[in-house]
Image (tube, rainbow, N blue to C red):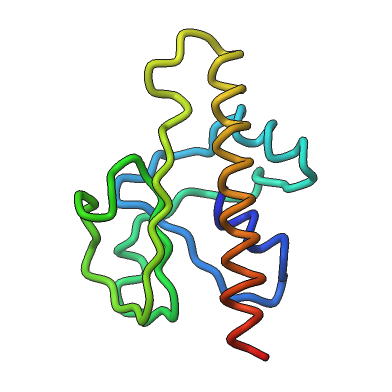
Length: 127
């Protein structure tokens, strides 16, 4: 979600998204709630971080339930890091509607964080 949101702000940004233990598909509910705000997730395929092991990034944005201190960060080269602590929308959910509601909350939180990151950090550093 974070990658797609950031990409929606600027199609020219070079953005890569990967996980430590990625699933083999994007959740249909995640696709649905992102479509509600005009962002298409259908083309996204989860990747493993090792695909980018030889890259050096300006920014590494980590997203997950762990705190910054608890997070296991793979050996990736980066200049600056930002951690976004969000709860899994699927964990402990008792229904599809609860997952949908949780996904919307995560989406909205990530939209706010990516808006700040893009307009206050990325755009400011370019000016």
